[in-house]
Length: 153
Image 1 (tube, helix red, strand yellow):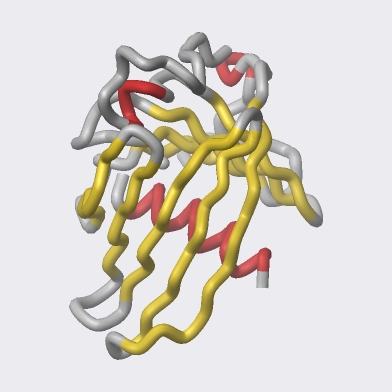
Image 2 (cartoon, rainbow, N blue to C red; image 1 turned 60 degrees about the vertical axis):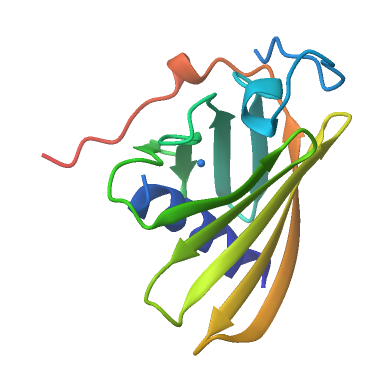
């Protein structure tokens, strides 16, 4: 189940092209994207590693780097192909709708508590909730500029 989510999360970021210096308790920030701008998050499981970086941009809320075998990373930005809609961008929560079709889509609810970014993925098929997955990503200070980007030439 988590593997499907990891792939869906990366592909969703790729298709809708999602050291932090922002404080989780930044009271001057009025929305999620500005409060967490620049923060980096990581999950590694079964040979797959995905990094997300939050951007303070509703048109490009995330950048992602993913590797499925550890050899190189596929980089994508969330504004590459459209297909994502921001439903809510409040101080403590970001909700995105990632559409495959009009009736097949994911609702991603993203929250941060301490050093954990939690993504709740609700997958709808034919507009009916089919599966819910909750994935925690850990805050990281890894230097994303050092990642080897895959070349597809």
